[in-house]
Image 1 (cartoon, rainbow, N blue to C red):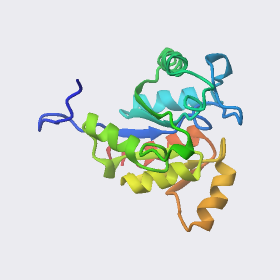
Image 2 (cartoon, helix red, strand yellow; image 1 turned 180 degrees about the vertical axis):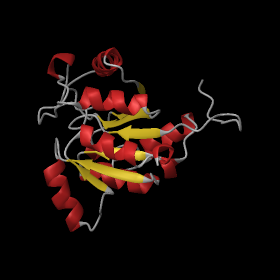
Image 3 (cartoon, rainbow, N blue to C red; image 1 turned 90 degrees about the vertical axis):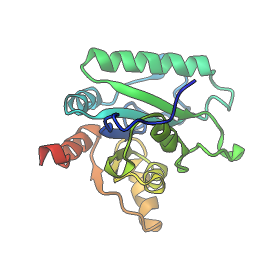
Length: 198
C-alpha cells in the first residue's frame, strides 16, 4: 500500500510532467501497441538527459485508450514503459514515474486528459508543489489538463499533434506559456526558467 501522507522532512520534487506519444516518441493514428512500434523522436533522449541532469523529476502523464479498446493489454503497456525507461536511462535520463489512463473517451472516466486526475494522483504520491511544475504536451488536452490541475507552466510542442493543438487552443482562447519546436526546445526553455538557474 502506498502512503500518500507527506512528512515535513520530504524535499519537494522539481517536476516536469510529460505527455508520451508525440512528445517523447512518434505518435501513430493506429496507436502505439508494442515496443516494436515505439520510436523516440529526434533529440528527445538528449532532452530527457538534460532535464535529469538539471535536477528535474520527469513524470509521464499519458492517455492510453488502446488498452480498453482491446488493442493491447496492460502487460503490453507495461513492457513498452519498462523498455522506454531503460532506453532513457541508458542515455543518462530518468523517468521518475508513469501515470496512464487506459479508458476510452466514451467511458467518461475521471483520469483521461484533459481531466487533471493523473496529475493529482502524482501529487498525492509524491511531494509536489504544482505551482512550480511544468507540463509538456503536443495536444490541446495536455495544456487544458495542466491548467485544470494547477501546474505553474504549460508548454506545447509542435511535434505530434502540436499544429492542430495551436488552432484548437486559439479557438478556446487558451494560451500555453511557451510553444516549442520539440522536446529539446521545451527542455531548454524549462531549464532557462528554473529559479535555480536564474
